[in-house]
Image (cartoon, rainbow, N blue to C red; front, side, top):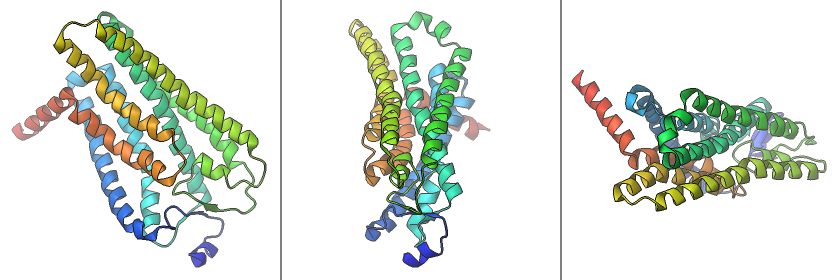
Length: 300
């Protein structure tokens, strides 16, 4: 290990799970399978949502954005993780580390905002059904998606740049399997109190505020559902919201406990794998669209 570190020049050393070498082979297999399922599941949702005209609705437009985010997010992390798990070299170049930090932070921040927008979409669908098409107009949906992506980029340009500019005094050993802000800040050889305050404020804005808005949206949804007399309408309302709620719980629940490599492994690898499964197994529209596409391919 030390020999590899000496020859790595200015590269960062991702210690990752090197303190538990007996787990690395198992983790390699599990992460690889999870990554392949992520690629397959999210690509399938994107293709089905684009090819089936019945899914050309705001809900599936945002779901396509979510699947695109998950694809890019895992691809920014997992290949490097697999490479480090596979061999003795645990290094990443400074440029590679900066790219990974910027891309993963941007996509993670974007997902926080996008899940909030999806909660608003469900609120309009359940609480304002007669005005749904006029409120959730395609141009408005595109604008909301643009806000989500731009907010992620903006947050990253601020947090990422400040973090990378911190003097590290030659410290290169990251006790993590990826380059992310908290792990990079710990390498600094100066007072990081201001950076910790900045991270706290960013957490408030990008985690607690979206969670609060999502809870408010679902508070109104629960009030509306309680007034529904029809059992079928109850099931439809719960069906359209259940998948989103489960994804929100997995995403924000894991992000709220970012201390620990295994928790980070959960939200960077496992959550993007589960999202398409949740939306396909619990969603009759997506399953129906997949069956129609399969029949069309078989028929041709």
